[in-house]
Length: 245
Length: 214
Image (cartoon, rainbow over all chains, first blue to last red; front, side, top):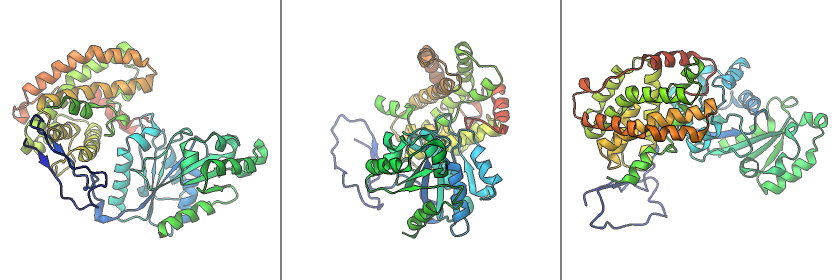
């Protein structure tokens, strides 16, 4: 039957799962995407920044962490930020007000009341934002994608980011790591934030550390207080390691 | 024509950016014009007969006439007086082409296509015809705004889907008319407008706080 194949691409090679097939006489005309061709548009200039997603529940300190990382890394890396706050400009305004990043390095994405959809099921608006930043600013080393505040089940698609950080805070209760969920169990880095509040809210950090270890195995967990460490030292160092690779 | 392919193209879960757009509903909700299911029914009927008809006709024409995408895109520009709506349509066209490239081999489009043009391009690449492109466009116009209504107004999702089911014959009728006109010169294609949607979109784009991109 007449149909259109586009085989023969070089990126990177046909998938190992690709099974050659034959066509029967009754099949309608149809076409196949080449399993060896990357369906994504190439980035301008072949540049590709490391993309790090930062997720976590409402109020856990995602935006404050992004601001701290901008302060820590903004002078040594070519950096941009995409925010997904429910209220379009809220988080971007926070970053601007705090003077941590110039306006042209921040893009806000509207999520239609579905912050988890925008980072997991339909990542198109976030991909557009990342690509627009790279087109406007030239090659970048690092793009931070901050999710809107959501719940423990929200995670980033691997089609959007390379690594993800999940931020929880001690004031949310020291049982949060034990509850698990994909953010706590599978994020590449778990940040337990606002440790300075632990004595005030009766949170036991050793319980959180033990539960995080049980949930995450060898994946790293760091404790953080942005009041005491405005440059988010351990998180910034974790990102520096990734950029060096 | 593959019915399953049409369902793939019209699936609300297609990652083509639609979830972030309310089809103009958010502005009308804020203005107090849409607050319950009856209001939504009127809103969707109006959308179907105006922007729905235009989108369906241009999707059908883009599916039928691959050499005329640029001219069709200009025709959509001319029918979209609101800059905010032109921007929203091109953003959704870009997202749709991104999804389409993962599904079928797409020809080079050469510019950022409007959503209906992109839909016609995808339909053609998927082996569908102008009639299917038109029905996918008309269906998308009402289901996108209906889904936004569930999220914005907390309407009963069963009641909203009951409404969508009742609108299905209207959807088919609009799509049939659109597809019948798919060969007309660009200037003669449907040009029904909805000034309140245009005005609402321009106000919406200036809001400091909004939940949807359009």
